[in-house]
Every structure is written in structure tokens, then in C-alpha cells.
Length: 410
Image 1 (cartoon, rainbow, N blue to C red):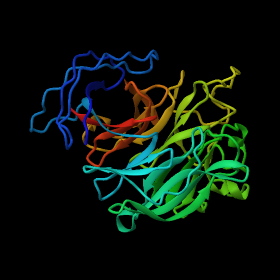
Image 2: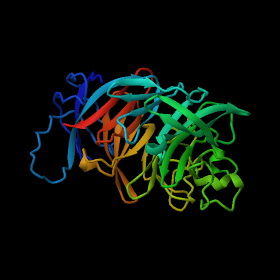
Image 3: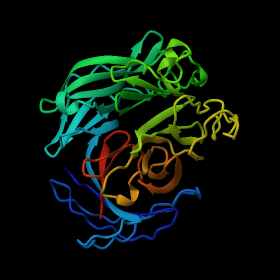
Image 4: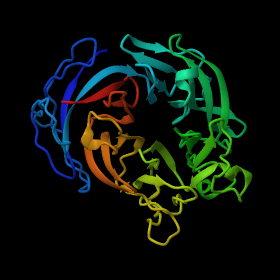
């Protein structure tokens, strides 16, 4: 492990501002001792609904005696290895291994001994936003090494996202038995809005399928574009999905009217949440419910890139409004719902990696409600957010030579 830079940031619960001071050096998680440098004071967000934060003094060491759950946390940021255009990561159950996908088609395994590249990865088509996408462990991973992957392939009509299963041999750094179980339909020209995020709950696989920049298919029942899908673990439509009376392809649908949902995660009570990129403004956090229509392209709190207006979400329009929205855009690239114990004040909250916003965002979740809580400037596009096995929060920067970041309480 290489710890290249340590930053100390503070988060105040709710919408309060913080003061600043030089950071301090935490204990490095493993390997070479971390180095510490002062951190420049970041600019607070111009959006009044976003919490203003900046570097602050470290919290004093807590006593071993029991204490109430804190209402705020101070954390350090350690910088580790770099990856080439990383897109997703997941900690593999029963191991200390982090799996990282790179858009160009590489799958890598990272642990205390370093980074290894996995053989046997399926051939991918690399486009503007497409390539190798998500990876998650299957429910039987600890028994048989099953993982789920998404990627982009070429075919009749253009390109589209696909989802497949494979067996991952962690010790041998090899994939085998790669089997495609689902594909986006139709394939079209163009290289954007594949989405292809994956989540598993119980016996079901959920897949986000973007609109591929085609707009109207998000409202059509004969296309998987602009939908969130609920499938069996082998890729078949779930028998009790809400669109059973519509076209056969619609039997896959869980919800419709989506643009580019790049985040997908379940909370502790089984609610499915999604973060979605809007057009020019109008990024969203949505609570996903079966059979609902989330409006795109008929309703959005943003506008089209050509300047033309899109009707805002309004009560009674027949569309499900977002729980949180941003204008201007922050470009949410991922979503994680924190369930760990290292940051107890944030348990159950959503964390979002912002691409154009170059920030880590916290959204407070309370039952069916959500409220913007904190925005920490990270001085880089944040592609992915993941919770580690011990409750640390891990981030992946976006782009070439993009660093893996680790957040721990101070």
C-alpha cells in the first residue's frame, strides 16, 4: 500500500459550516507509513442547500469508556494505488481483496500484497462512456466464486450493455465460465448512457439501463432503455414484476422513465435507491418503487443541453418526483448506503461520488425521505464509492492514473 497524501476533513451533521486548519497524519492502514501535508481550504458550494464544509482541526482521541453516538465525524483521506479509468469496485466476501474494473477492459484485484490483473475477462467494446462496467459478488461467492459483471458489446445496430456471470478464482486471478445472461435492447449507435449498474437483493438481480441518449424509449414498453430491471439471478424476468400485462420485454421492468441511473443500492430495510444523472441540471436521488414512472424525458428539474425547457416535476403530473435534485449538475456517478460502525452518525445515509461536482456527497436517508446533508470538495472527479469490510469508506477517482482513496475516522 502506498499512502501518498493525507487530508483531514470534517463533517458537521445537518447544514452547518466548518472552520479550517492543517491536517494531521493518521496511522496508515498497512504497508508504508503515510505522509501528511496541509490541505488548501476548499471552496464551499454555491448551492445554499448544500452544506458548507472545509478542513478543520482533528477531533481529540475518544476515551475507551462508552459514549453516545456522535453527531459529527472528522476523517482522514489516504491515497493508495492508481488505476486507469476505473469504473467500479467491490470488496469480495470472505477475503481482504478489492476487485476494480477499468473501462478499457481490465479487471484487477487489490490486497495488501499489491495489484494483480485478472485473466479471462470478456472482450468489451470501448466507447465514449462504455467498456467494462460494474462488478458485484453473487450470493454464493464464498462457496463457488460467482460474480456478476456488466460491460458493453457490439452487435447488430450498434452497441449495448450486457450482464454476465463468471467464476472468479481469487488466488489464481482468473475468470472462467463467463456466461451472458442479459442484454440491453435495442443496440444503437452512439457511446453514452449505458448505466449498467448492478445490485442484488435476495433472489433478484437489479440492473439500471440508461436511455442511450435516445430520450423517448424511456417511456416505451418495447425497449429496455431508460428502465430499472428486476431479474432472477440467471437473468430472466421476475415472475411478479409490475408490467406483466404489457409487451413481453416489459416483463423485465421494475420502473421506467430514467435517463442515466449510475447508482443503485438497497438500504437496511430493503428500499431501493438510485442516483441519476439529469440533463443540464436535474440530477436526482430517487426511491425506486415497482411500477412507477420517474418522468424522463417528459419531466425533469433540469433543461436540455440545447437550452430548451423540460417541464419540472409537479404534483399530479403522473410522474414520481425525485427525493433530492441538483441544479446545477453535480453528475452523480455512484451511490453507496453506509451500514458500517466506523462512522456511526452516518449509518443508513447515502454517499454519492460526484463527477463534474468533484465531491463526495452525503444524503441523509430517513425512511422514505431524503435530504442533502454534506458536500466535501475532493478536487477530483469521484467515480465510485464503496464501504469496506471494517466500515472504512473507499473512493475511486475518475480518469487516467486515478487514485484509490480511503476515508477513516481521525
